[in-house]
Length: 205
Image 1: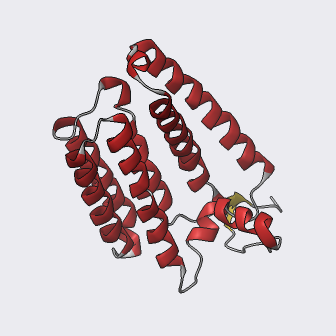
Image 2: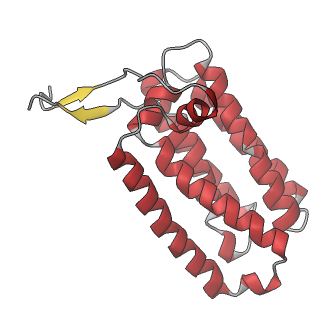
């Protein structure tokens, strides 16, 4: 048993109004260090992603709306991966509340809009790609959500791995967009749906 660590599920109170809704969306009680890692990590990865896409030359063929979709989705995925991995997000989205499961599945379902935007605007109306990834996302999400808690992590990793492989061989995109599926399914299946104990170092150690 680790005596230098403790698990803290207590959710701090949030502000009323829009600020409180934002705090709950990001995870109430986010520490300054968590925010710093999110900002620096997402910012650094965004720079790498932008450099990679730019060096591929694919941007020369994109219109303004296509650029906007790629930039917004890229930032959302990178930021969302880190946000959903924080203690504050784990405490909130996996709290003991009858509505928590519905909230998690609605969060995942809302990301079908990402697939629609990418498939319709960036990939030239590739309906097969949209439908294929939608089926992968929703089926894997339901399986993970209703799997016993001790099996959620490996189940999520299995769903994630399957989605990445299917995208590589049967739902291909230009190489400059090959990052989308790994980041998309990592954010939703692994970071968002898997409950993890919010560990902290014991304050009396």
